[in-house]
Length: 358
Image 1 (cartoon, rainbow, N blue to C red):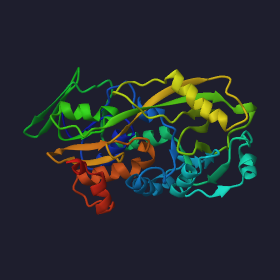
Image 2 (cartoon, rainbow, N blue to C red):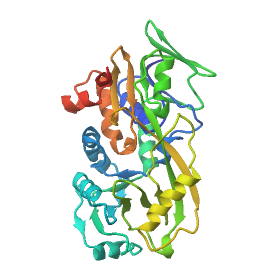
Image 3 (tube, helix red, strand yellow):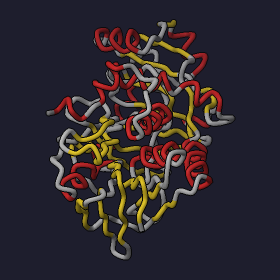
Image 4 (cartoon, rainbow, N blue to C red):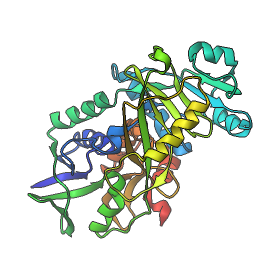
C-alpha cells in the first residue's frame, strides 16, 4: 500500500498531524496498540495552562488557544492554585511570575478549597486562566477529520522494519507492508527507537515516568469547582476528576520505553507531600496509573525534518505539553511537510527544529 504521509504513532501528536495532513494527501497512521492514545496521551492530567513550560512551548500553547476556543466543549473552567510552604519563597515567587498568578490571602484560598492547612501553607496564588481539556473529544475530533478526508488508521500495527526506498520509505508490520513518500515519527517514548530502525541518528529523547493516584473527595467535599493545585516547584499536584481527586507526586524518573505503571513508594511519597498541605488525610486509593512523559535534551518539542533526510519528519518530545500544544504543533508540522509558509515565527521554527542538535 502506498501513501503520501505515513505516521508512526497514534497518540495526540500523530492523530492531530493526521488531521492536518489529510487535507494535503493520502494519510496512513500506524498505532502499535489496540487503541489510540494508549500510552502518555491516555494518561494525561489534561490541563490547558498556556504559560506552562519553556518559552517555545508557551508560544505553541498560546497559539493553540483560538483552536480550543472555537471547538465547543473541549475546554471547561478549572483554574490553578500554587501553594507555598514556609521556606519555599524562592520557588513560589518563580512559579507565580512565570505562570502569571496573583498572590491571594490564605482565607481567600481556603474559601475556595476548605481543606488547606493553615499550619503548613504559608503562601497561595490563584488564577482562572487554566482549563480542563476533554482529551477524548479533542482526540476524536482530530481522528474524525482525518478519516473524513480519507485517512486510514491501522491499530495493532507495530512497525517491525523500516527501510529507505527510491520513492521514500517502506514500513513493515506483522501483517502488512506500507510505502510512503514522507515518514512522520510521532511514536512518543519510542521515537529514538523508530529513528534507529529507519537508519536515522537518534536525538537523545528521555522518557520519564509520572505516577497518579485517584482518591475519594477529601472529607466528602464537593470538589467540582476546586482549581488544580500545585505544590510550588511542582513537587505534587492534585486535580478534581469526576467527583474525586487525582494526585500526582510529579516525579520524573528516567525509564526505558514501556507500558508504564505506578511505583507504590513514589506514590506514597507524593501523597505525603500533598497531605502536608491539607487537613484531610488520604485513607483510600481508588486507582493508580503512570505514564511516560518524553523530553528532548533541551525539554522543547522537536518538530521538523531530519537534517540528513528531509523525508523523515520528527514530531516528538511533547513531554507534559502534548494536548495543550497539539493544535499549533500539528499545524506547524503539516505546514513544514507540505512546504506551506507557517504562521509560526522563524525563531520558533528554529527553536523546534531537529537541526538544533546537529
